Length: 421
Image 1: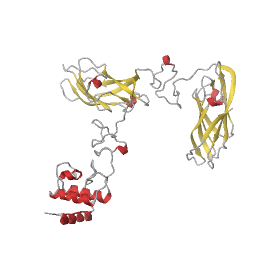
Image 2: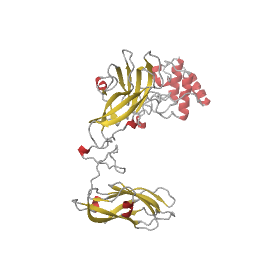
Image 3: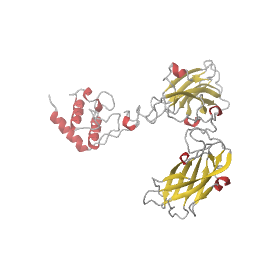
Image 4: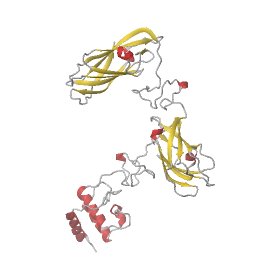
């Protein structure tokens, strides 16, 4: 027996209802071919499934509740999706949307399970070096803890634990565990859950608890302890009663192989500074080395010029001049008198603030009356030359404009600077 005409009448009725029921699901309800749209033919298929004349396997997308049947509410949701379009894919809808950058989606936006709250687990190409992350357990005074579950979120894409779950590779990366504890790890590829208990029901000593050895990832900045998060999911005392107030924290992260950017000054590999990254522009350059300079008694003058796009009137800008430390130097540091004495503004009436980093000079200048700064020469810098250093060339200097604003103090792109003798 055919039900095509009644079904089409039913579909027409449903469309006139302009249905609004139904929430976003892992797959758009009614989208049988998963093309992102629900058509009239697909609605008819759903109705036939609901009437029992078509097998549910023909369009599982109508069975949003996965209970093995198609209800009127599910058909209404399909009609609504046909009218207004399928709901946009979002993290937590149970469907992995690679175009959004998702690598997993378990139907929620919470950490602690197989997929993190942002639905993305970053890839990691191991460099061959590792870092050690120390984890400490903090127990309230007067409390004895005999069992605890820790959840340690680590920066995936920056570091990784090889292996997964509770395999031998994961277990091999748990170091310095207190003796006598039974410990079960579960690595989720973005976090590590540790279940630990004392088989003899003796208290677990607070303080240093475990050291995690993690691979570092190619192209990533070495992490610090603030890139990790540790929470105690549950704890029990020696009577196996629940205990509150127990906390944990990652207290230190150190590289097992000295490298620039690990936050430790390694003099053996030539470092003179290490601020935890491998970038210029801050207190320590990208190579973690500021070359010493014994002044020769001679000086060299370098001019910083700037140029603006046609029609742009610049009232404020910050230039960043990278100079060859170990070849030349600016006496003093930061914004002290010696630094200021080495600078001669070329344009009168401007307010200027220098900051010498001992390998680069950042120079902020603005017009107090909001008038345009004439393009061209900005400041002259007198550098000391260094003893036994090679002759300095203008190619040894690199100038960039970090930011600029016009007379209305709106940001301006395309402003450049250069150095000249």
